[in-house]
Image (cartoon, rainbow over all chains, first blue to last red):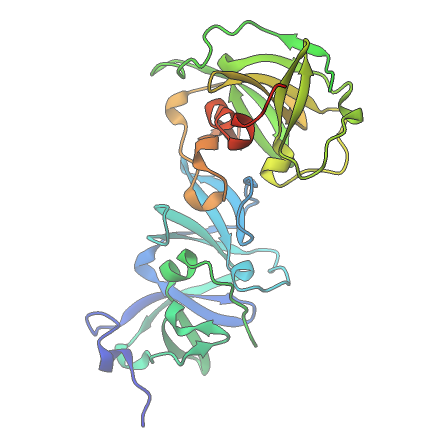
Length: 163
Length: 170
């Protein structure tokens, strides 16, 4: 049986191509929906907040607004620190706050994913349960995992990224 | 614990409301761990030195302990313990802020006092929900000052903590 696509299931939305922001994390390719990414900024050291969750680094001020900064490596249980010049995606509608900063290794580009190229994920991809994944695709011969950031950040479940 | 007074000031209005719109509010800056915190000086009574603190028989991991103050025993909140950044030893810069919270006096153990700054209370932003696992009632919010983020604590939130409310002066 051929792999089921988001286009087949209609889960990807209108059936048109999906615009996503492609980024690297721990040597793997991930994406978030472009519409959820308000801005991409350079990483800067956040102010540590009291009793923050393990994957939260603290808060930063950006244009007069304060947002929590979450480290996706830590959310995925990756012990090794990221590269020296990480990026922060300002992501909206991803939890109880209007926006959060999501620390990733490197932002690559905006990508248009045709609906028939987005596959329904298997139960787990790299150890991440399908519940937190909107789809998988092929990006230059490598698997691309389109994350459901809202569900990923709202859940308390520990996730360990596998090779 | 016996502590020596460094600064004493009259409390103009205990539990007073923050400054009205358009007014400047004075905030005492202090450090706990690596981060910068602030508390409105309206609720501040005294800043006490660290003398005597080193001999305090304080079990670690205990957030609220006792402070001997002018013949009374007051609750002392160890902010380092509460905030999850407590050190093994108290630095010489350690101070106790004596404040009024929820109508009761209490002490706050901090790593250092840094000074007083003016803030515009209208620019205080709420603490992001994902930024801390502590009760939001402990914080007034966040404000930026000279490129730094100040975490403003709430004296009433601290005074309303269960550990403080259950503290017995006996």
